[in-house]
Length: 512
Ligand code: NAD
Image (spheres, rainbow, N blue to C red):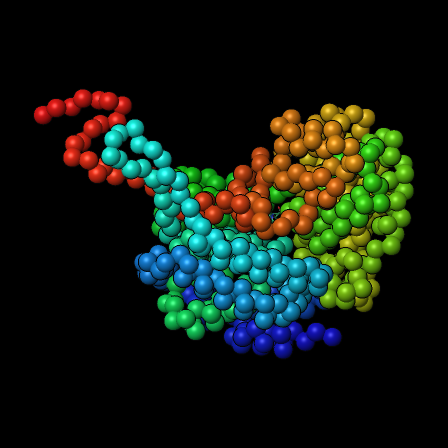
């Protein structure tokens, strides 16, 4: 029902294999290596994309450096106007881009549209922000002196993104970085190059109409090697990297060794506490959507349910029944709840985690497995499963990027909070309770240690208005709303003396 060829054409993608783009210029060397993009929906090859070489990389960085000199001199509201137009272009392309996201990445069509909506939302946010990049003023201790702070752009922002939010994560970074006066170089996941090419076409179209020079928004296609080039490059003051904790540790070390800044958005191991005071029907929707939405491939996916012993049996029965009703299949068919995993490596990792869980003593209430048959020919469709476990199992401490849900029983809220915090990651958390004391305790300093803590909402599905990110092995970075923009700028403190003398601070005397 969806003709991907037409969708690509509508998105302006005629040449399917560029290695890089500096805007309206697309570059490719015919003899470089290629990445094949296969759809997990049906296993078909969508395109074969060229990988950027070291000289492509150099050409992009050089263009970005030139463009920065132009872009930083544009007033911030003018930059915001460009981002406003980009948001409008996304509105026009929402259906086509959302469908491509669903087809290339495998998430449901609704979630594909939702992802593009998130891009539109962050553009709106960034437009307003472009008139609000506020600094503070301070009172000087010296007479006839004025003190204030202001925020300046950093330069080139390198964006390394993961496959699971192939377009939204870039836009969270790019929309803010651009209004702040930076230029961007985006290295998307090698598993989802086409959606990135589509986004670059959309933003380049806006820049063309406005005569913006090449190099403000750049795309570079490749794997880990390109990510490493960005991380080690002194010319790139900020690297924003989204992906696994393993990748984050490598990027953090490389960027820190040159004293650059990094913004890290890494893995989660998110839990919902289902209290004895929970609305169980509401909790069920939050838990099931959190665990099986995007086939368990969200950084905020619900991995663990920590359930009070008094409601454990009742809630588990509801959960098992709900899993029995899940429809697994083509994500472009809106009738289905669960689509495929990204590729067969992800399927192998899912199967491996199930085996490890069983070996450690996990008891499966809903069995997992790979689906076979014509509809599942890509080999990427798996059954969401549920296991009763102990929190300290090695496999439970680890993020498996697949729909495996772990159940843990608790007696007291203190114990539940300790279990929720008792993992290396610290991204998202939630409590389901109608009891005010419990909710406030969960949100207090002694409660959840995560960057996101929700009450009567699941762990996934954040809005762009809040700062997004997590603690511990999740990396500590914050993107999107609130004052996350400050990461994309440098703060400068200014003191101006309009007196006729030069008094020193702290009353120090120095006479000549
Ligand atoms: P991944 O770590 O395999 O790859 C992510 C990106 O990093 C890719 O573009 C990859 O090419 C690049 N990369 C890999 N190794 C690198 C290195 N040494 N140096 C530089 N770049 C390198 O992750 P993935 O499988 O694409 O995505 C899934 C992971 O992303 C999960 O752990 C998930 O929780 C996490 N994630 C986190 C957030 C968040 O906001 N916290 C959002 C989305 C995804």
